[in-house]
Image (cartoon, rainbow, N blue to C red; front, side, top):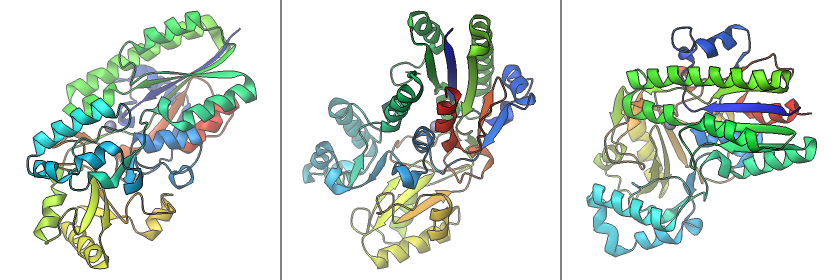
Length: 383
Ligand SMILES: [Zn+2]
């Protein structure tokens, strides 16, 4: 009989939802002591996915953010966009956003959608040519290892190819699949999108979590009925979301201090994290002073880089790394000029909203306590 492990990856499921009223099925798994609270890494889903699939910390796998400072590796498209003819667009933010988005879709089919990078510095930024979990080199590596070690096939169902009807695709796939041993990752990212748009306390977010619980319960019953003990269910969430509490226009704050973007410094402004590359030590001190005065976040110093395993060999991920306190966001940021998202994540990993957890339908013989242990768990389940 087929040995099957299905790993449901739910992006942004708040652990507080694991109660009988909202998610009766998942909360029943949690009360059976099959819930593992996992130590998380500092970053967004790209960081967490790279870590769990490689089994390595960010400074070991060299993947922290999907963008980094590297003028030599910046795409040709970005170099073209920084030509003097386009620079007036930096003052017309919406037009710039649409120009970069249009060009990126036309020429760069893959990679993260950072469409709001100012053109005066766009040619200093490079992007990995992949973004989704199934595109990461670590996904392919893990698939190869599973095949070699236990003749197990690793399958992925989810975005960017598909975002809806994931469970019916799963059953359709299983009807055709001839693999004796198979691990399937089913990646749900709709909840994350709803949280960003409507907020993690909104009815839309809550109702979707409820419907997800019923879908997971029905899928579990169906697979247990056909495979019994040969089926293992894993449900994983990479983080939750915090309700929007405050917003900061970091570029304008630095401008007030006389710091000019593209002249005194280069930066990448994400939703909750900002990375800076100052021109010289004077600019660096000025930026640090300004961030200290804002008082709404934390500069990741040498000790914290060590603690969070982001001690990279070079400064590709920022000479200065600044993260906001939970509930904060940068507006505008390099993903969008259009107002603040209502739900946010990407704060220090100790925070309540950054909690990650793994549920299973049976007691796991492999001890798992960190998101990076997921890789070895999958290998162990088929050994
Ligand atoms: Zn998100």
